[in-house]
Image 1: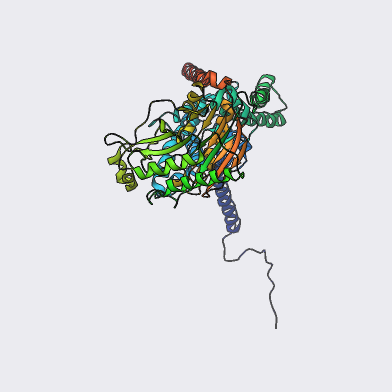
Image 2: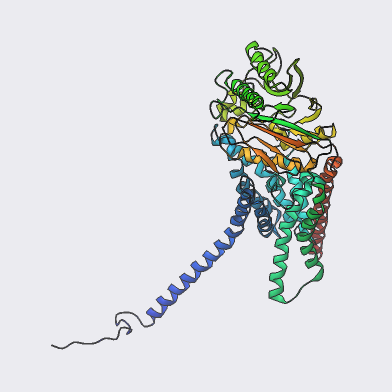
Length: 552
């Protein structure tokens, strides 16, 4: 039996000459096309993905995580994303960064009302970040662009803190820096300067890295741009170090022993106060327990006591049983006590009120919350909003704002009051200090947001406020986290969430004003002017470049 051997690489005798070579070339060509397309797609997706990632890094820099430093690579990555891009691209990339940042940061807003309000809020607030992205793209071709870009970011924050419906400052970069090295700058120029320093350092890091890469590629090292990039990194750090002496926790006006009561709530969510008088009874019982502990020598006698916002779930003026419960608790502890209550007058709007309750004279002074929360304490455009979420009808009667600045004299200590949401607004805290507050209280009710990160984000705000105005800050919360904070921003006492507690601590009292307190809005206005100058310069350069192309 015989066989015929054929080489494996011999051409098929039935195929036309050259067809194998042609097929191989065709396959190679198709592979090259797919490779080119894949690389093109990768390039197109790189910047949008980086924009989203920069936002996520910003979110991760916020409490409860002590990762404040992630804000620096976040801004560096944002700088790489939008630098040199067209304005429209800057807007779109900025919007993606805003979504990556605000969607996880504000997820607590939908804790018990569903994702609709959360997504609507994020979509609206991300527009301000998008506008910042557009502005950063516009100034990114200017000499020293990190300076102008950081100012543009603060301009976006300033707008977001004011419009619409009085603004929503939650997520200002400064509020993620309570543990950071830049925190002392809050005492110099408040939250605008603190946020500006973080953004400037982050953009400067990217510019310094960009210059280093260019040097390795070309061997050229232009002195001016390199100095500007290094300065953008080092000046904020040096400024924070120079501001350290302003962070002072010594007592200028003696001390006061304060008690913050956390009575807890019977249930989480929107129905935290569904059991009539239960929230009030919880706070009264915990105050009475503190009085017993004082009598047995287990706790120090406080000079005054602070209850949280909404700690009386019914109006003590209209309900004699509520009045009696409060009065007995205050008489037992024997010192002035601040009660948070919802006041329901016969006509007009509700009031979110803090009441100074004296053990002998009863209620003697009140403070009505001045910045009430849209879509929480009042419903703008109610008929329209109802179409998307029926929970608006839970707020059947809107709250109205007060007009008087809240400073109570409690046993000789002047205590400034900023109720919950107000702590996010620079003016609402500052004017209590300019009106003589030696200590700041931020009574809050976070029960409607469950065990979310919201309470830790708000606590970080109070820590920044402590350094900004060099005041002790006491944060009594219905369900936690309650805390007592020194003027240097350090927490000395803190409660667990959804656990009754009474925090008692001797705190320093101070009356001197930091530069941030004295300057007020001036640092923010200067940064807004810097942003406007950069945008104006960029517009003039762009116009000149277009005119040059037309005449070429």
